[in-house]
Image (cartoon, rainbow, N blue to C red; front, side):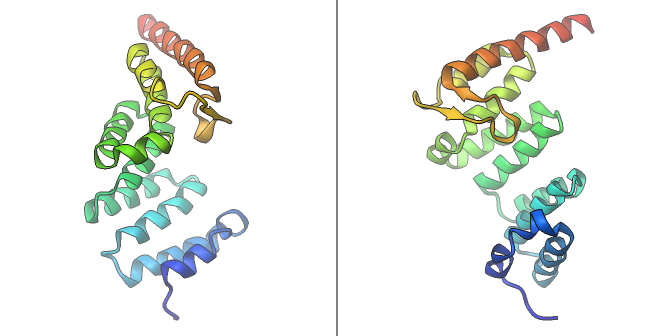
Length: 172
């Protein structure tokens, strides 16, 4: 079997949409070639997520982070945990991502994702503090399911999410 490189896999990125099983095969080969390559596990987690195999995706992110802690990988794992409703753990990973690369954290929607997690836990103050770190001209279509809109629209939605979370907590 021919050796595959990260460049080869990147060139086939579109397969995640058109033939995810084929992309998974390529990503598996990359991991098998060098099990100590954290980036290979990161690449494979993407297709596991696409296939709805979040357990495998999380395991690959864990392996990648064990090999080489990286702010992008912590942010990716935070977003996967967020998707799974594991908001406290997601916040921890977002905090790690921010600590490793504070500048990138701000420009790569980190505050938005962490703000939503805080809101879903009912912590409006922390959610709004993160929202305040969004640029004044912020606008998003709702990346990865996060609140969409301008900074002001996101803040309003975060307040609503936090209020709903607090209501659920009272009802329990």
